[in-house]
Each structure stands twice: as structure tokens, then as C-alpha cells.
Length: 313
Image (cartoon, rainbow, N blue to C red):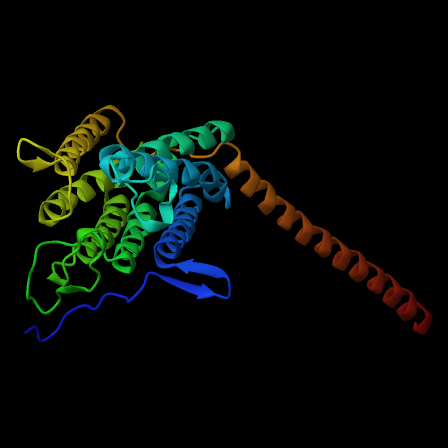
């Protein structure tokens, strides 16, 4: 008998009158807001304008959601297109099923479109939002807790996850909470990228590459623990191979980029510095105008005083 465990919610949706509030979607939305908030702070610190990250996210987020869903549907097509399944379920994103690999790939395409429209270097933008993306993943993983999905092997550890649902082939019991492992790992990745970026002044996409490499190294062993159905290649789950391949690509980019373009970009957003200088100049001009008014008034007063003192004399 287990002495302790992480309970699963009895249901993943609450109703506010006729409006359904789904835990999975709620986690995704919160994650997006955190990523944009942190990305904006980092972008400003690098010399960019406030609001630019949100403007580009308008392109990146929808592309990312579509990409994440496409990856999931393609790699788990039998869940939607095999006999007895309804292909319409492929569009029910709120029921879970987003592949991070597809989300990052297509989200990057959306970000590239947004950056191109603003005349911003894509690698600089990626560096600014990298830790925020990791935190968004950490929050988004709790959506799997609401849906009672993507758990690991059976265990009786004190932090085991209790699964109570028997739908879609689930077997009630206690399992490794792989959603929690990945959430904590992503938080660690976010802090690692922030620290390394400050310590080594990472630029030209290297902070983003570090995020990718660090995430993949954790995803590989977490993925290996999962027991949900998945395609296997040479005895390993498909996502494990994907994590290994993407990890190698990210590390290669880190090494090559460090040699070719060391340091960080001098300008991340054309015109941002000039706008800041103009704003400072306007403030100074305003102060000077006030000083002139004071000087004029003080200049009038002495004249009156002199006239007055002349009469007295």
C-alpha cells in the first residue's frame, strides 16, 4: 500500500456556466504569457523595443500550435485514422497531443516571418525567448496531469502519480510522474540558459542552441521511462532518436557558431537605440525649456528689483 502519491484530478475540465475551462489549454495559455513576458524583458535588456517580442509571438504561437499538433498526429496517426477511430479527433487539440519538435520547428518559421517583417535578426530573437520557451514547456506539461496522460512506468515511490482513469487503455495504479520530471527539468534548463547567457554573453542563436541541447538531453531519458504507445526504431522510441539527433545538431551549431561569430550582436533591433536616444533628448529638451522659463522669470525679477531699488535710492 502506497504511503503517499500525487493524486490526479478527477476531471480535466471545469465549466463556468456553459463555458468549458480545460486544464490542458489553460496550462498552454499561461505558458505562452510567461514566455512572452520573460522574452520581452530579455529583449529590452539586449537593446530592443518593448512589445516587439509580443508582436512576433503573434506569428510564432499559432504556427507553433499547428506544428506541434501536426507532429503528434503524424507520429501517432493510428490514434486518428485507424479502424474504429474518428479522424475529426485530430483537430481536438484541447484533449492533449502536442509534439514539442513540431511546435519548435513550425514556431520558428512563424517567428522568422515576424522577424523578417520587422527587420530583426532571427538568432537574436531566439536567444531572447529561449528561457521563456523552457518555462512555457514546464507549465504546459501540467496539462498532461489534468488529462492523466504520458506517465511513466509503475512505481511505489512517495511521489508516484496516481492514475484513476481507465479510458483509452489506461490501467489505474501509481506510476512515475514523467510530466513532473520534465517540468522540473525545463525549469532547470531555463535557469541554465539565463546563467550561461550572462556569464558568456551568448549571441547569434547560441543561447537558443544551449536550450535545445539541454532540453534534449533530459527529454531522452524521460521519454525512455514513458509507457504510452509509441513507434520504435531499433528498439528505441521515435522521440528518443529525435532527441539524440536534435541534440547533436544543437551542439554542432554551438561549436561552429562560437568559432565563426564570437560574442553577441551589437544591434538586435534597428532604430531601437536611436528611439531611446531621441526619447532621452526630448526629456532633456523639456527640462532645458523649464530651466529657460525659470531663467526668464528670474531675469525679470532682478529687473524689477533693480528698478525698485533705484526709486528707493
